[in-house]
Amino acid sequence: MPRSRAAATARRRPVSRPRWAAVRLLALDVDGVLTDGTIDVHSDGTESKCFSVLDGMGLKRLAALGIEVAWISGRASGATTARATELKIAHLIQDRTDKLAVLQQLARRFGLEPRQVCYMGDDDFDAPAIRWAGIGVAPAAAMPAALAVADYVPHRPAGRGAVREVCEHILGSRGQKSLP
Image (cartoon, rainbow, N blue to C red; front, side, top):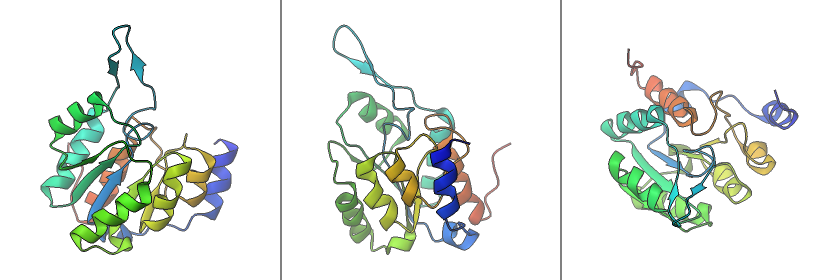
């Protein structure tokens, strides 16, 4: 385990089943959370990103249970818009680095308290939102500021099932079994 993750893990409080069950909004950063943080820029200026189908299925299952899903990205991207459209993500906010302000606006819009919000981010400007949320999550490769305030660090890497792992905790807290 990398030193920064071990140090951050020592400060975390356990995330109990009732805390996962309270979640009514899962909000996610995109680059470095739903992807591994890599952006391929092609010679014609277009870009591409890799998203995990595992994460997509988890998000679809949450939405089917009536849990709000939001993506809050610090940069605008056609690849992000295309994937969000494909998954029918109702709340896509791009080109915003003030993640905490956006997260609080969403919570007010849905009439939620912080304990009903789970936020996952990987960078310094995600740290205030991670800290504010009832469950703050940072992938293992996140920046130290995000790891330091996270309640939970998934075992799977970003862009390779880390979001699905969070979805499974939320689903499991509601008695939903993993798909065979």
